[in-house]
Image 1 (tube, rainbow, N blue to C red):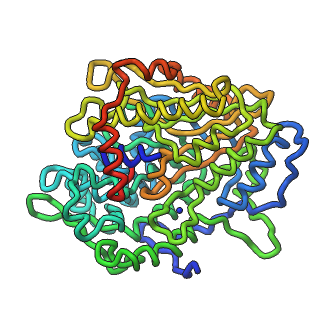
Image 2: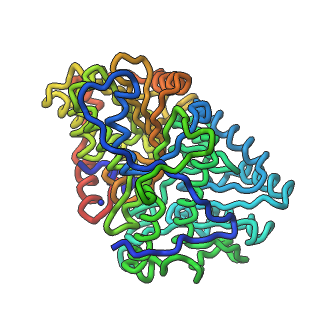
Image 3: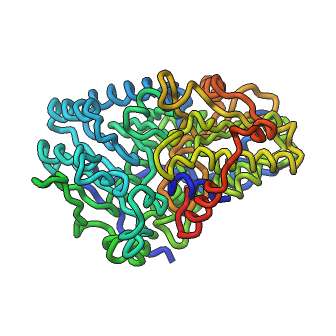
Length: 532
């Protein structure tokens, strides 16, 4: 979408609210790791010492849990992701909760898998959260909403809940006149949380055929009750601020209703009050918790001494004023820490399918002391908008323009020897054997080590849009487990199997030149308040 793409291409007191309850599960008392005293930046020795300057501050920014590295499984391919998800659904005992931008309107196999699991286990409950704009865009033609509504009809509202989040930023005349094909640029539900019982997959992938077959992303399976329950609580918070999908006997097949039990008034009727109510609710779910005396909670009993810390990240800027989201502050701290001289022997790899890092992140990436750094982004031939109809077909060129600007910034800051930009291409999209690239993340390898000790996984594209318009969720992993570090290193490598370096000379070629219409489209979207 040009709105989604163009806004991505443009170079965020707390009233006490009761956390929402849900018939789909009880509230969980979550044991969080607590802040500790800052460690000195000088002279760390060994992996633990090198990690301390990161974690001491991270403990103050975001909640975290101690687990074992063996509790994190990294999946490689779209097929691995799909089969793992279906297997978990088939074996589900108590709950399935799926948060995604959308479920493809033709995903009959996935829906059948869910139906069979619900039929086989009367105790099983299902909750699905998608975005309202994307989920109803085709209505009254078949849509995500019409695909999901029959689940409520068959299994009842006591077992199945379908929710759709609507941005408070698109109301009134703006909502009435901005075309459906570009209105997503004003904010989306973008969290990708795929929870089944006490396990959860964090990813950037949506639930549609291309994400199951030939659209490369990242997928981490966390087998942790604490991590899963944390995201379940966050998920419930957002569902309590979302519309309820009800089945209807009409052409569209569904209606969107605003339950009186929701935590705030409708964003379409009272957007300011909606944000005011949401602020306290969401802040209470994403902020680190403390106890008297500064003592730490014990995590998962015997796992307190786990070798891996998972920091929970939430970027829900559109729902909070003031904005106390955690993802951007966490990434900012991590990259600033890498600027210290002691990390001169470190390296990082950063990837985003839609390459348009927030300006602050671009500056931080180019200011680290790290060497041998790599940026991976989609080639125009691996961009999902390649040769698409209408204004969205301009997006691949828009990202080409942004990538060229990034290379110029590398040259201007004399980082040519430290940072390499690679474009990922596996065939050509929409041609036989062609794939698209949608992965996003960050890996950091400490000095004198071969594999990453730090990585970020989640839904964010790390753009200005991600930090102002969309709802994002993810995790930062800090590990000393050799096995997990090796798996993170392997992931970092296999994502480069189809990636090749590009230079300013490549962008100077005739076929890579960007027309005036692309620049104008990017400017217009920014001017009217959207983001790519």
